[in-house]
Image (cartoon, rainbow, N blue to C red; front, side, top):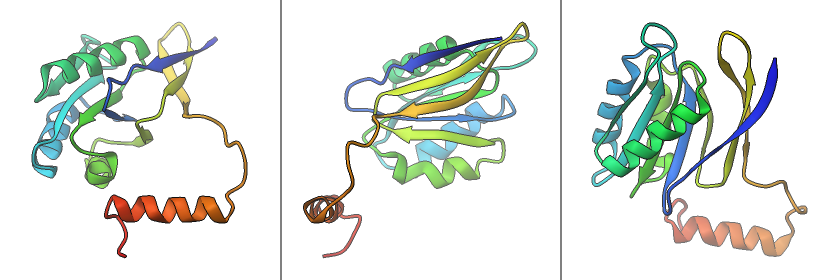
Amino acid sequence: MELKTERIEIPEGCNVIFGQTHFVKTVEDLFEILIGAVPGIKFGIGFCEASGHCLVRGEGNDEALKEAAMNNAFRIGAGHSFIIILKDAFPINILNAVKMCQEVCTIYCATANPVEVILAKSEQGKGVLGVIDGSSPKGIEKEDGIAWRKELLRKFKYKLG
C-alpha cells in the first residue's frame, strides 16, 4: 500500500466542499440542492464513480468550475469521493443541505484554505484517509484575537451587533 497526498486546486475567489458519498445519483441531487440554496450561486461538482464505468461524473452551472471540480476529482481518484467548488456563496450557506443529501456519507472539509487530501493507494484503488485543511496554529488566542474574531463575524452579519 502506498500513501500520498494530492492538493485540491481551488480557483481564485472560490470555496470547496470535499466528501464521500455512495451512489451516482448524488451528482444530480447535489446540483438540485445547490441551485435552490443561494440565489446567484456558481458551482461545479465532480464525483468519482467507484464501480461500473468508473468515470468522473460532473454537473454544475458554471463550466469553468465544473471542469475544475472534475479535474480535481480525477487527480484525487478515490472511489465515491466528491468535490464541490463554489463561488458567490460560502460553505456555511449550503453545508447542512449537502450533509442532508441521502447519499452523502462524510464531509472531509469545507474551506477556502489550501487543502491536501491524504490518500492510500492499493491494487484495488484509492481511499481517503483524511485532509490537511490550511495551516497549523501559530499560537493561542488572546484578547486582541478575540476582538478580531468577533468583529469579523459581525462584519459578515453572522452575529448581531
